[in-house]
Length: 455
Image 1 (cartoon, rainbow, N blue to C red):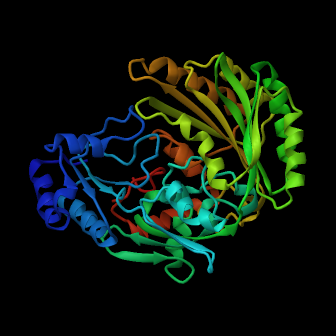
Image 2 (image 1 turned 135 degrees about the vertical axis):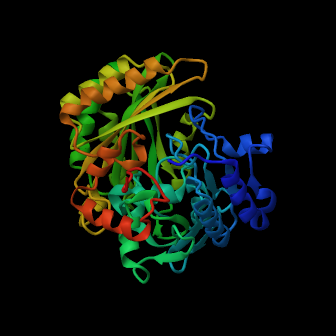
Image 3 (image 1 turned 30 degrees about the vertical axis):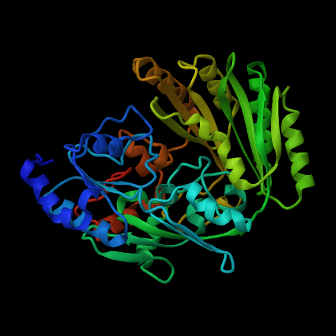
């Protein structure tokens, strides 16, 4: 990459200051810059040259043009939840959408419209009063745009599909600063690529989603002692393999007072709550739960369960794998990983992909892995005073033990900067079409995401 000079930065400042005023933040404004640069993962220490806090699509277009004209690397901060910190690039210009978090529900049309910086919490604040939801991720702080454009696994995946399967349209600022609408009535190829291709095509400044009536879910946490881990995971694998669309279950290991505990986190989204209770009773019977906090609640309340596991200021590193099923080999690898965990803050999470999401034609969107599968997240967490080496070694050892039963590819939102080849593999037969779309919409690779679709 060409070296960035003070003159390049000054060119961008002159172009943007009339539009943004004090919302164009430079390192010289130390306190405001450090606050704007900070992300929840304290391991991310990149220092951009400028942060452009935009309020509307026109300002986003101006920021994209300014970065291109000045030759500055560009990154986009929406929710800012990416563990690898791709919202920031050293010496670059950050298009910061954290001031664009509006969300408006139309209960009559069963739609919700959100701005590009909206989080899941922002979206649900607009829809929950009407008893309506769309497919979301698991943590309420996650940005809607980043979640959706890469896929959007979550607790409603079985009944309503991925987040991207519920997307009705999007407004996108392209690499030349122009705006295009992607959707069934907009640009069809951008619409296809945007649903699974991630942040490779532009800055998403607005999204419209289909809503579903869901006033109540049966959800919560079942914690079992570590000694039950083998039987709980084996029973989980059997239950989810035959689970109806309405039942999506997460499992894994979370910190407990005496060390890791195996958990089950069911979400029943069906109208027949009695059937849901029977399904959850089957999960209870897999071991000897020491904590049972499953009950009927609004969906927005259920999503708060995992928020406490994200502690700003800690260091985070994530490894992940796709598995066809939670086989005995995989279960043994997870149990061993939990037993050898390097930090009391680290976790192992198993997500399920099934049901409605698995009935979509793999060629219908850029997201190609449409067969039922498991997503494994190995999340190493440690305080900033600790060395990263042993925590990285632990995370790597867990996924290496999973490799003999892993599928090719991986979910791009969970992959790191060294996982580009695996991310490309995730697109399978859709990769060539996605590369063609990249050359059409962003031939100069202004937007560089995982996977990098142009060298």
